Image (cartoon, rainbow over all chains, first blue to last red; front, top):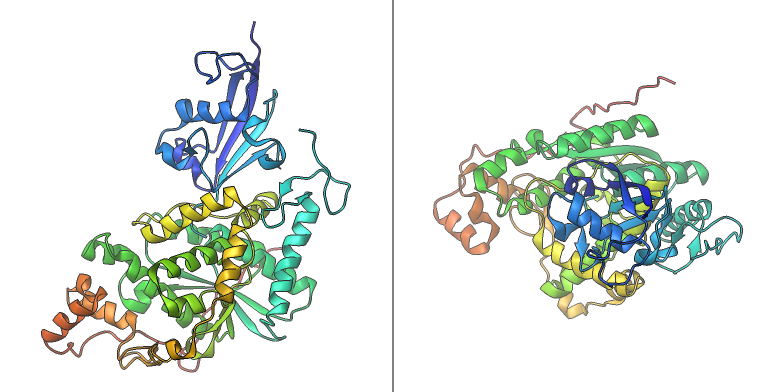
Length: 111
Length: 355
């Protein structure tokens, strides 16, 4: 039986406009990446790279090129994992845990 | 990855990797170094003297919101002795500027700073909505940019301030350096990395955030829970800047110090004296009196085109000649008001003192 991770995902800095103008989303992801969606065919724990892929395919409503570039986030978007810069947490390779809070903030809008 | 401890205090958990230095630091140390670096930028450049009246150009966006907060904090912490004001320009863009000005009005209350809002409508007789319905979305950024720059100066004049500070950050400056290199704009390339320039009526303009990374400004706003507004302007964005920005953000991923490196390159760029003399001398606009390098300043030229129904033709020299060939400008053309403090009483909205 696969377990589920419950995650809180927040968009700000204008990114919420790409996600139905909704800032906070609560979602459940399988703890292990489903084989048919994952790039490597062997099972691996659900990480932030998979979360980005999931958000892009399931929640994004508008203009994917403003959110992703290749299989990562578009440069200029900041990511925080439990209020810590994702650059300190292994970026896309960070393995998600139940209850994690992920924040995406665009810096690309006018100041 | 195990959570690292802060490279500065060695105690708290690191929450941020600084793009400028690669250091991993905690929240409190981040606030402290961010504010202290801005303080050093201000003191090294000797931007202010005690008693100066300083207007903060406030759009409600991230940069100016953080700037207002940090200017107020530093003014109190280091006793700069500055009289701070918020100065906002209302371009008249429904669904964009009206919303962002609501943010500025909240900031006014939150930071207890007096606020002055100046509208394109009262200055030029045209809102951006009206301009776009006249000329379309193609060249409207030209109008908006020229009009905003003058509006800030005129607003500052009406507040009788010595100085305008704007929220331009390191990323903005690096972008501008790249754009000026690509366009071969020598005059602007020489000027764009100056922290302080002299504008109309000897009002200084400066950029206390010119060495502050956008990433850190946004992180600062996030961790301080500052209230800012973020939506793209509903009219077409500055496409040329967009290319420079995308390129710069890609560079930053590969090498975070690239942004500060480009600024340093721009600063080190010297313009030879014999190149400088070919640049046009400054004079004053024959119609409104604003500083200008031609008989008419850019705002008056653009406004004349709008009023004569030839708005799209005034963005090039050739089209200007065509306009002139149609005869002299009608004498009922609007003179853009200067708002010199001696002539006009200033009404400033004071923050409510409800606490």
